[in-house]
Length: 86
Image (cartoon, rainbow, N blue to C red; front, top):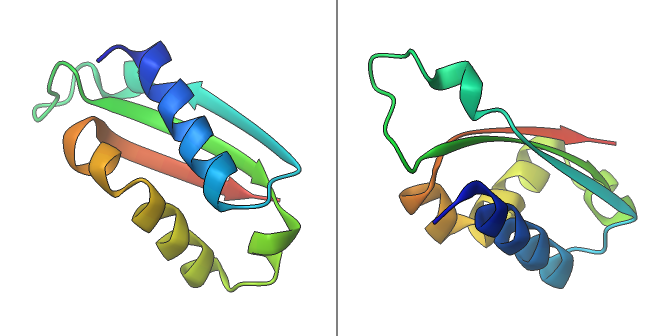
């Protein structure tokens, strides 16, 4: 899978499961290129989400919800994920 496909899948899954006012997903994989444990095909994503639904939850609960939605992608394609909630 390439990064553009992954971003489309992540966006689609989050949109389908959370009421989102705005979302921005960035590829930050370059930050891990020289790490000892870097693996090709595993990406670092930075996700900025504006969601009234997630605002009602604690930071931990909202993060758990996102991790649950992206379970397969986290196991197979995402090396690192940064979530910023607005």
